[in-house]
Length: 189
Image 1 (tube, rainbow, N blue to C red):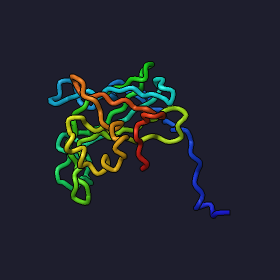
Image 2 (cartoon, helix red, strand yellow):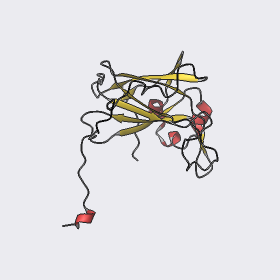
Image 3 (cartoon, rainbow, N blue to C red):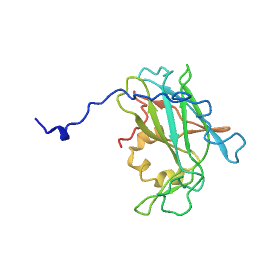
Image 4 (tube, helix red, strand yellow):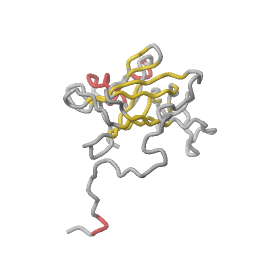
């Protein structure tokens, strides 16, 4: 038997969630930027289960850099960090829908000197899942940057489309499929 320090705790369903003053979700959680912010766009989507049915009680989180590709963090090595928090949280509605109002982030440098295409980082939390799922949203108008992105280009060509949003008049649409033939690509952290 292993020493107690070597034992891991078993996976649990996501949570527990602590009692926040306004609950796990808050009314302006999807509003990463205020209405009227220059360059604001809307990211809409639907979460689907393995049967293709909408998931009415998932929680989606996004976080990302600002328009310059800067994070609001003192560890960002590129000098002045952003005042932009870049975080939002939205529960899905009865039809599995979610939305965020945010701005398109700038490209990001990688430690090895390459550049990541503009993208949003996404977490999916839903009942029955023992761990959160993590994926990315890439933008459809960044074909050249997407082709050069080291993360996106590591995904099989026939699956990359699950990570690229579709253009809409006021932003983009990114549907999340938890299982099935068109399952969204999720990343292990």
